[in-house]
Image 1 (tube, rainbow, N blue to C red):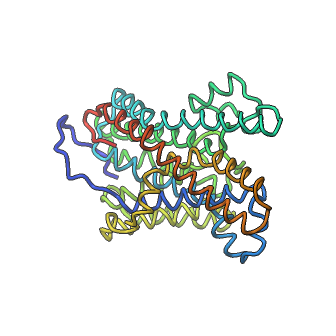
Image 2: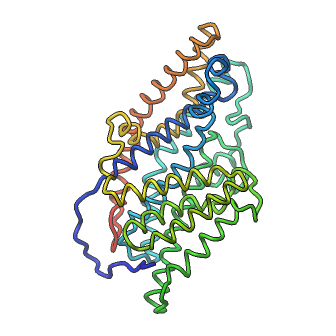
Image 3: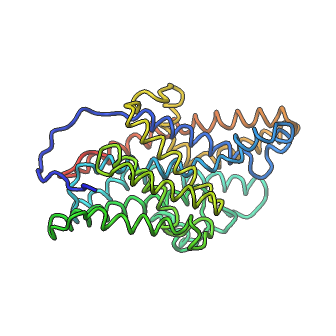
Length: 372
């Protein structure tokens, strides 16, 4: 792996490239996750009972596969954003600040939205206020504000937050490892410094889908799902000749084999997405594939939509079924109305909260690097 960055502090900006294919995959992933959550708690029991089993499985039950799509895309995009960065402690600090400025405002707003709906639900149902089915304590809220609820094994206020906690760890660990590889190359003149750092990291991550370490479900730390993020990184590096594709495909084959043997479908989906990214890049289709306006729109608002859809959809469905009889037609109506309301709210949140957070993050200058 050739992970050396340019040593100049002034970088000529290359033409801006927009990966429409990546945004399209984001749109698919978030829609899939919404459909998965829509069918939980038997809310669509009548509808799904009359649909073909294969359709229910693909459209609703497999929706959790949107998560590995997000993880692989994150690795791909972060590898792109750090492609010319010379990483040191100061850069790492600015990178962390920039990531937090980009992600945290929408996250905090979603916490307020979730707590608001939980409070309203407790009032209507005459139940105790317990977001995530657990009483809200100061410590639990504080842990959420710093993305630490997984590490302290606290119940999430909103169930989707577990992936965000893992993603934050992905970003910081990857930037630190990339900085270490560069330090070994520049300061210690170590050849193949990238391999020295990332091969052990990749193999350690592969031990989980291989069954060497027990898969306990949702992890508290990043390592059990680290391979999904790395697959996105390796796909990007292979595309840009920083990693020979044979190594990427070897790692992919290892994960697919492990997934087939141990029934870890998460790893299989991750590999498929990573290969699609590499193939699209090599075919120069990144700016062409999935360039449908509605899908690009979903991709653009996917973060806001992901953060807020569970409480909003739950409220819409609760009210809809209260007003209508619970039958297949009413469930279809509530499903479509819920998606419409969730998308509308996310679009508003993108405009008022997420878009300003993007601008805020861009004010953090990344010296010796490029904008993320």
